[in-house]
Image (cartoon, rainbow, N blue to C red; front, side, top):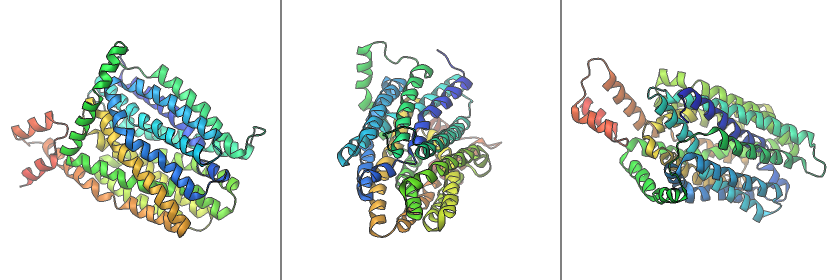
Length: 446
């Protein structure tokens, strides 16, 4: 079925909401539940880090698989694994089962990372090559923020309400998230229209056999593209530093109020407000990009996010921590679509999911390393020290956007009135998606 750019965007946003609402439900209790069931903070850091290491092993193969057998099929498989992961998390009562839950979550994240965005960008550009994909990606950031906010608010409310007799309060949002993941799986099956890439099982296996080639092509793009390498490197710092506010903020609240359930009740509304703030941040990204350039916008937001995370670590009292947390998510919401827009500019449709997987691949193990390092640092020193270290790591990634800025400036120069591009330059930039326009800019300035 052929989609218009507008209908593709509507379905993309609906599937985004279904995907991220269950995540919001679990956010207030993701760390607090295993702590309540007897794990130490260091043990929580170790089991959650398994997700990142599993993603590291599977991210590229699953991205290549999405580019060969189709994005819809991979997302359906991801949904099944996600339901299994959440089921395991619900019943986990010790280190081994929590480790299994997070390992399955890693498989889910590897399969889920990239196919939906790649499907939308390709469908929208096929329907209308002039479509401004940054508008759809920014709208996704807004919908994602609202969905997680609603989920977090509902999750905190479920903890306070505890409506299920015999089920501990911290587990009720996880059960609700499990139902939400089943609904998201149904949504992919019914809303995601994609031309078949293989007509039969044999064709599917032949397409799957092309996955190593897709992976090799993605790695080649990374090796040849200076801008792409720098953008992917940003994710190393971003993945490590996000632990400081995503994982440690509920623990910081528990430290202040002195009770895990009370902290979860605060974290629910705070998480809801934070993701609404993220949605607002995402909505202003196109405006910032038009005025500053998308690369300058992304670099500035990295520094600002580091500053806000310092506030989470150092401000005293619940009000101070929550205020800094909200400011952090405004910046976080604006930064995501800026980074993704720069990333999509570096690749064509044939390897789009693979490149998105490359980007996610480095973020996940960096997050795992950040979880191990910062939780251990919190136990050895203090939560405030661990959070401030994460903040510094976030901010130092800003210079990695400079190659993208030079590329933007070169593109603006080629579009300027009266500019006549050199024939060789035009041919190269039109045929090779990994072509590094930094060199063109240097030649032109020289």
